Structures are given as structure tokens and as C-alpha cells.
Length: 224
Image (cartoon, rainbow, N blue to C red; front, top):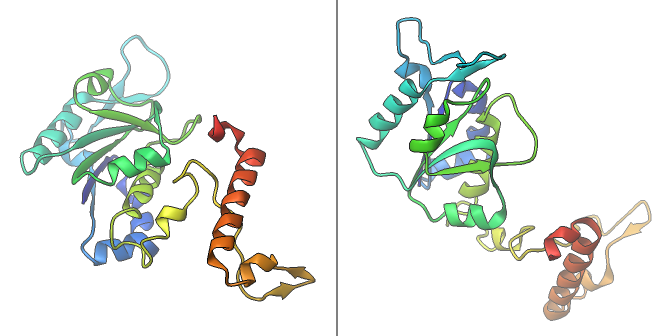
């Protein structure tokens, strides 16, 4: 998979892709993430990529010209399955959406900044808008990193145990059950006996029941 992320401050995402699972995924050749500086496509010698909004108001708006030039350059080299704009009013990111995107080959993610992008970008140049929550960030960079992480970890070979992703929260519409590790007892707090029984069927049954219970208590909206 290839993910090209367009931003005016790509440095914000450098750390996210330089450590842990995402770094190992790139090292294995399972994913290629490219951080593209929109200012490389600026409209003038001052590296301008934003301007004041028509009609007035506070804040700057990313212009359509550099975004269009960047997209045309990328598309001249390969075909893309999706051009995604990270937006607070886009489709809410959830596990089924991450699963769907993990099957794609080439993806572009456009990060908004300031007051966002010229509306014509959203109308004509992108294929999908995605939100990571009902709140506003300073830009789409952190949201793009979240989206990328949620997708990359699903790629075959990224996780050492490929069944791990299948047991994550939300994969089956439920929150994951509680988990325990050594020591078996700490401060008088023990581990449920069932997990020490070695009876796989009973353990699976317990985990499912705990998932349902936890979902009812903490995220009843998921059961609807």
C-alpha cells in the first residue's frame, strides 16, 4: 500500500511514522508513506498556499491552485483509489471503514489547515471526506496520522500475530474484553480463574460475554 499525505506542515507527522508498528511496516516494504509539502506547489516565490476568504472573516483558506497542481503531479505517476480530505464534518472513522480502506492500493490524504480548503477542492478534487471525531483540530495532520495508523495495522504481515487485529475492539461491533498478564496476583488483585484453566472454549465464551457486558456498560450505542 502507498499513502501520500499532503500538508503545509508535514513535520507534524514525522514522529508518527518513525516508530513502533508503522516503522516496522515500512521497513518490511508493506506500506510506503510519503509526506508531501504543499508549499512545493506554491503559487508564487513567497511559497503562498493560502489566502483570505472571500466575503471576509477571520482565518486563512488553503487555495485550490496548489492543491490541484499537487494532485495532478501525483496522479501523473500512478492511479489512486481514494483522495481523502480530513474534515470534522466528514464520514466518521470507524473500524469497518478502516477495514475497507486497508484493501486499497494507493491513497492520497489531504490535510486541511487554518480555516480549511477552498470549497471547490471538496466539490471537485476529492473522493471522500473523513472525520475522527466531533471536534476541531488545528489541522488535519494528526487526524491523517490516526487514519493511517488504523489502516496500516490491518495490512497482512504488519502485526506479528495476524489474529491480533481480528480481536481488537469494534471488529465485531463490540468492545474488546479485559486482558491480564503476569504477575498472577498483585496487591491482592487476582486474575479470573477461567483464564488460568487452559480450557479454550470456556475462555472464548467468557471473553465474548465480557465483551458484550462491557459494551452494554460503556458503549451501548454500538449495540443499536
